[in-house]
Image 1 (spheres, rainbow, N blue to C red):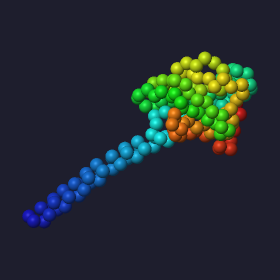
Image 2 (image 1 turned 90 degrees about the vertical axis):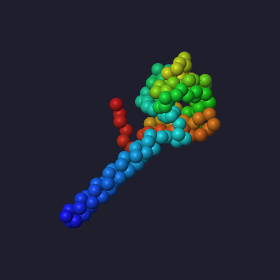
Image 3 (image 1 turned 60 degrees about the vertical axis):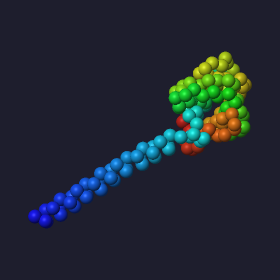
Image 4 (image 1 turned 45 degrees about the vertical axis):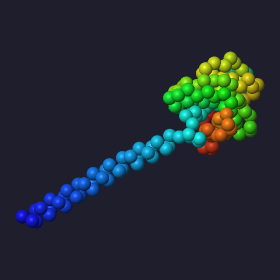
Length: 158
C-alpha cells in the first residue's frame, strides 16, 4: 500500500514542477520579443524604406531618391522639428506634419509640393550616396532611428 502512495506523490510533484517551468518560460519569451521591436529613444517613429537608386540630376531622378519615415505606433505624431541627416551633414527639417498611426511619409530630395505622404527637400543634387547613413532626430535632438546601407561590399547594379 505505502509504496504506491509514495510513487503517486512523486509523480504529482514532477507534474507540478513541469507546469511551473512551462508557465515561466512563456512570459520571458514574450518580453524578449517586445524589446527587439524598439529603435532608439522608444519612439514609434522609425526610418522605413530607403531608395537611392536614381542617378542623374534632373528633378525626376532627385525625387526618385527618398527616405521613408514611418509611424509604427497607433497614435498620430507631429514631426514638426524632426530632422533627417545624411553622413555628410545635409539636414532636412520637418515642418508641421501630422503622421497618423501606421502611416509613412517619403522625404524626396528634389522639388515638389509637400503633402501628407510626400515631402520635398528642394535640393538640386542627390545627397544619399550608395553607402550612407540616414539619422532621424526628434525635435529635442535625440536620435530616434538610424539606417545604414551599402556596407555589405556587394553592389547590385540593376
